[in-house]
Image (tube, rainbow, N blue to C red; front, side, top):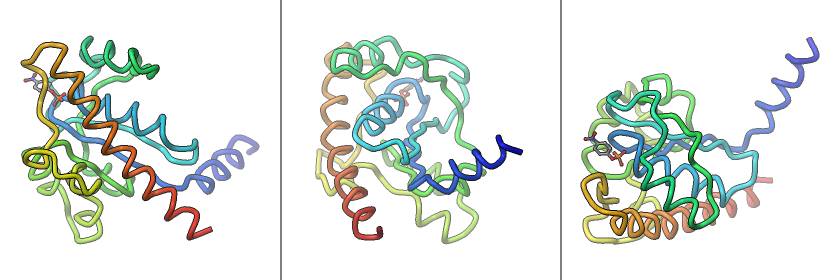
Length: 171
Ligand code: 4NP
């Protein structure tokens, strides 16, 4: 009973649930999850997923872990998982890394409410990097991960700022 009350209190205290999505959920979205979590208070839930299940249960790519650690963010214990249709009910904002991820996630949406939660991360941040996509660094060296880190950091900073302003205005 006490545990149930605690759970209800915890759920009521949650401001927003954010899901970061890429292809494999081992390179970009785990970094995006760690960076975004570092910029928001604890009443914001941040998670990540992939559009494929090929790496399900794996920790993030060592290059993502190393790059995040360089900036004081520990993503080493995250586990890859594929996105599910239930995620579209559970999360309030779903940010996709590239256009292919966006198309695949939109194809899971069953109604306009779910569709309205899904966006391209760079567009949500009002940033016009190249094609508006976060490039897949999987086939690159560590330099590619460093570039992706900074791109994600800039985007997450902008989005976190907007979300916190909106939270302040609504309270
Ligand atoms: P991510 O990168 O989508 O940023 O996690 C990739 C991870 C794995 C593969 C491709 C991209 N793969 O082909 O296995």
